[in-house]
Image (cartoon, rainbow, N blue to C red; front, side, top):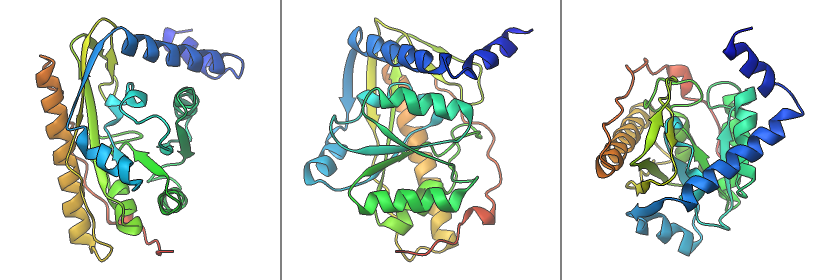
Length: 249
């Protein structure tokens, strides 16, 4: 059996998965504790947290690793995580940091996922989305986050991270694996508001704005850490069926 086959068999084991998630959580803690971190424009999320106002956290799939340490401890958040086996590993890993999850996708079973996020936001819980997940194209935003913003009235707040010592995996998302003993930075972007009356053209404009802002802060973070920028993949056509017909509640 190939190494990839062995890896799939191991991650499919009900006995092994909890241990893998525990190990991943310890690694994230290890990296954070043994590195020096700073935050750029941290006053943006602080203002929402201080007022107790919900927002939609947005970050690229490849910058997910250090998510638990960009978030304010005690602020309730649920990340949208795919129902795939890999998504289960991610959900169980972030649970070690007190972060919740909503299982689904803005593409597969999208209506249910978006309704769950809108409900959570209206109840005062924050939600998080990787706008290029779960399968890409890399660093190209789909319409999920802006659809949730339109339905809920909550703004989207982008964030990213970079480190001085890392490995970029050869995965579709060019996942950034941080090494310990690094310098690290979390960079927050400007909030993006979406009107409840936004039509298809306005939603596409907001999607494009989110994509541009996330890519801008990701380039900024990599530049601050002396790293070469990771380029986005070729964009996929935005399908009109992604504009899910959900009703406000």
